[in-house]
Image (tube, rainbow, N blue to C red; front, side):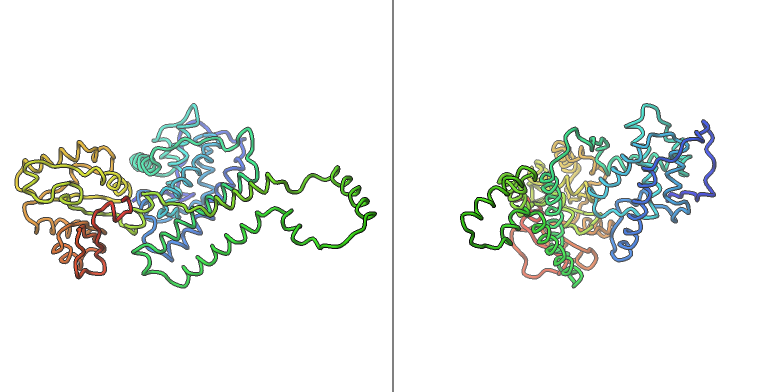
Length: 446
């Protein structure tokens, strides 16, 4: 665990004297205020829901530091002399982290370590001159080894996407483009939440609060659609009809020409088409990505065990492995997404060492070990079916994937969820055992 000293406990940094006349940039005050609001909201959410924040355990401390976020950012700015843009980019990293890992929560136990790590990485990207990790560790009140680990952990969580494009473009987007962008994000969020809510494992937790959230989203969608309609259309519907004579017609036409020369046109066919395009794009179905489907199906499962025969490999028996081992190409994409999100262990029963070598070589040739989430040490071999069962019991995974119905039945009492891969659906299965013809079909790839 990592600890950060309080405001009174942080030692003064020995180094170049910081400029005393430089005032704290206003952007630091804004970021600290936003982060305090975010932490307060996430603290409440963490108390209401379990299973969040596991992806940020590397940044957790034993207790929350006594120094405030504002004072902590001022300390970093005072001693490191990094540009204010580094703090903005550091906040962008935290925002990206929340979008790439929805289950992660920035709370009081990790916010200080996240901030110093993000600012340090941003300084290396933006500033021409910057201090090393050891100096940042002394400023942040953590050890150099801990900061090195947190830097590496954050880079992998961000998938090394640390460049930030300019937010201010030469030509600002039109209001219709901003509406399209806003509604696209809203529709994607609604689709993701709806699919997550009605997924196989979360439907059991449906309550009145969730139903109320759905109703609130529906009402928000309706009011958004009503708000983006053109004023001209609404005015035409409200305008009363009356009969006029020729004199009134000529005078009204003259008055209308005078008004038109002063006031701009309220609505045009081009604007009507733009608004219609906004509505059409909003109601287009948004298909979730494979990564989102994997996270939904695994239901926050952080450890997964899976047998090789019949699931990852084309072969279905240990005798076939004595001749050859072939990785199914259709399973590679799913396997990669699982390794990104969970700690995956592969296991199989083999008859000799040659079969073990063939399996490892086949996995390596297929590129399974190059993704970074799976190493050879996590591929386990045994000589009996009981041995594979013992592997699963010792690892205590959240999910186990197997083709043997007897093993699935034996492990049903000990494993939270299981996936039984078989072309024939068994007559009786435990409530926590799901059945699918293949792992790709279970995650919606076929």
